[in-house]
Length: 158
Image 1 (cartoon, one colour):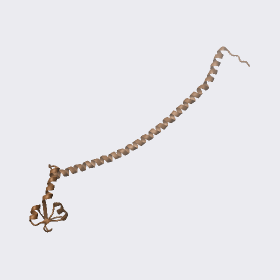
Image 2: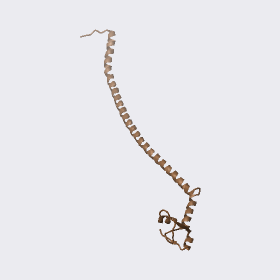
Image 3: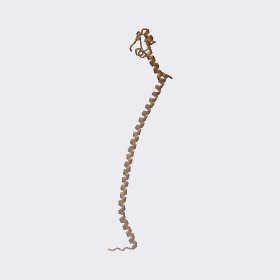
């Protein structure tokens, strides 16, 4: 059967046929774009989850580091206080003299001064030895070593 076509209708029919033919061609492109968008969104979600996990781990580690830092700061403060106390005690012992001077003075005293303790016989002792022998109150005589020997005192053992 033949169909009567007018020239005006012919152009619109051809353009409608072409549009029908071209529509299936556009459909696969739209599907590809949709597929690419879905893949991109999935990748974006995975990356965001991974970054969130890394952020959580880093903040957790950061918290632990802050705790350790606070412990170290507290320990440092305690050590600074102890250092101040030691320096204060050292100043009370040596005053304005140098440590070298005080050490020499103590060595001189240990080498040359001895003590006779009442009730311990005719013996003389160094200061450290005397402190080991007696408990509480005691009476003593202090001599230089030569005077103790000339008074008949003998070296006592600790």
